[in-house]
Length: 310
Image (tube, rainbow, N blue to C red):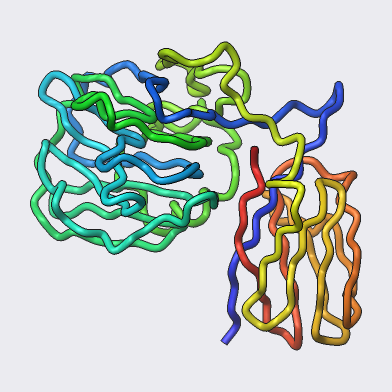
């Protein structure tokens, strides 16, 4: 059976032509982003985004969390890095079984319907079958904070946050989590969309947020790799992807004639090479944006997902 796993790399170049792709970097002290109340009762709801924790989190740290008026709902981190949620002030004690890996990019989502809620971690669902009455959303949404206590602040990076007035399906979550929305204005059920490239404005257009207690430019740019040290990702079939710098990938293959393809978000293979047994250096300095990298051996597609976004 073909095994398909996505390997996503954000390779960012800076020029007068290519826009900078950035993320929101929060310190976990008292900085956060406040999204205005949606002021509508929703029985079907989705919030999703990419996060990367930077160290141990305070218990009940709010990631995407609404608290105010008659509303207590959203995603938080419990017991360090365990993914949890509130809805109408309840369900906080349900255990999703999802635990984040510190320092690694992860896509998370909360999807609520009247009879259940689903927490996703990198497209993998965990379902809580329980009645979920409509949430009023008459209080602000906080990115990086639960204002119930001063210490419930998120320490890490946030990107590509989307709010929906609909319960997105598992397939929709998986199909769209690795790419930007092409035309947000055409998405009727999209409540708000934040990319954090230069500000905290709503890309959809009607819910610009406010940065509270943050530095003037809290947007982390992708001008280097994760660190000066080499990053090694061992793929399922034994080969290794070794990142050396933002211009080169090093593939260490244990097979003769593996095919490497780098796909853009539109699904086009923009770089294809036959990888020899041993080490092969792949130049990616001419690429900018998000890409999916795969290695194919004897008809089997192998890869591993990482998010090199700063």
